[in-house]
Length: 97
Image (cartoon, rainbow, N blue to C red; front, side):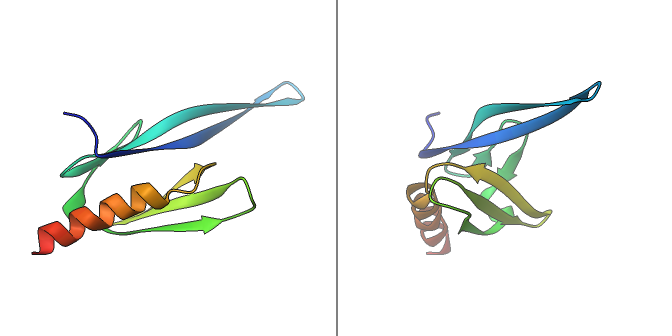
């Protein structure tokens, strides 16, 4: 099954090695399907997502928030997630009808 929309996000891992801090960034993707949103490590049923929001930090970076039954999950993004959020809202409206 192909996703309706995808959104890249950054996962940052910091490790201390002796006296030096190493920062490793990995690109992952959020996948929006008809009934679910998939991350690199989790799946969220659309009925368990209340909302999505975006908070810009600077010109290049921001956070996409998934508001769910389990709490709020944040994903650092470098591209504005407007298309991803719009597609989610279309699915929500379709399910309400």
